[in-house]
Amino acid sequence: MQKISDYGRGRKPDEWRRCPGCGWLGRPDLGGRPILHPFRRVTGESADCVFCGWEDSNLASESFVDNGWLCEWIVCQACGRENVRRIERAPE
View 1 (cartoon, rainbow, N blue to C red):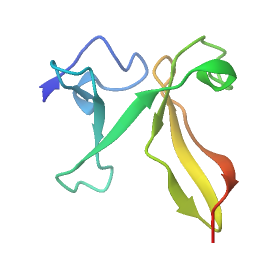
View 2: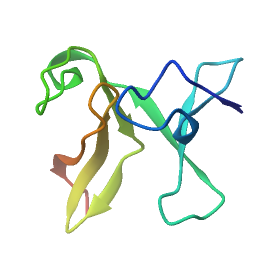
View 3: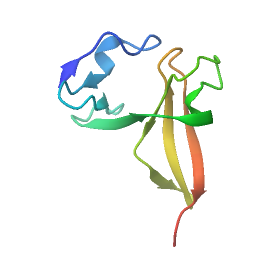
View 4: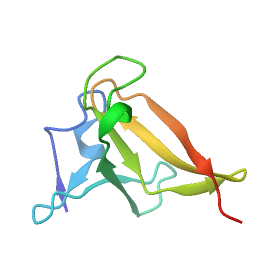
């Protein structure tokens, strides 16, 4: 993984990594654990940041279940704001 400086206008550049082979993006665990969380580019209506309005700036984490909901962690690459987005009720 390479550290990248062209992502994360609102974040420290060393917080993001990109695989030079596939373009995969990752962010180190905020708890300081030595793991990277994979992110993908968001498309469609959800790609624009609800905080700063920057278009096509959002990245989404792998989905996870929280309180019975399937969710994604959304991060804006322009302003650095983060938000958990509910996708749908989690399958039982």
